[in-house]
Image 1 (cartoon, one colour):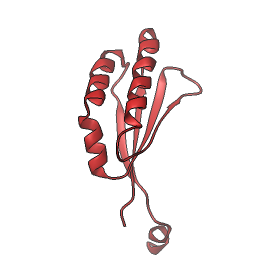
Image 2 (cartoon, rainbow, N blue to C red; image 1 turned 135 degrees about the vertical axis):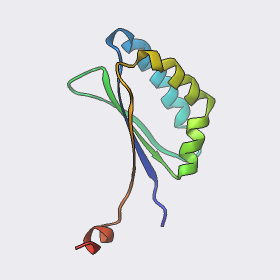
Image 3 (cartoon, one colour; image 1 turned 45 degrees about the vertical axis):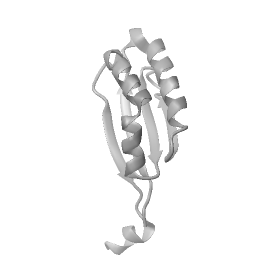
Image 4 (cartoon, rainbow, N blue to C red; image 1 turned 30 degrees about the vertical axis):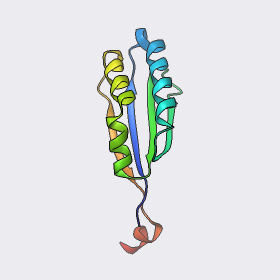
Length: 106
């Protein structure tokens, strides 16, 4: 059985570029949510730091994620935002685990 792929991307913007960073993210999110295979593309901001974000992505398949990364709007947004980042983006990929897989390892 195939499960969606979840991507968590953690990043922090430079405070002096926060407004333009947020505007670029809004454009990226709007375009990405229209892509085939995009099940979720939600942005969260830290309750303690308005410059810290996590992007929660859920893709129907690896091919959908790869297609997203190749989209012109994705490439443009990533290039544009690179100078506005305070540190390197931390990206991790996740997959669901079935309940019976958790209990089978006992």
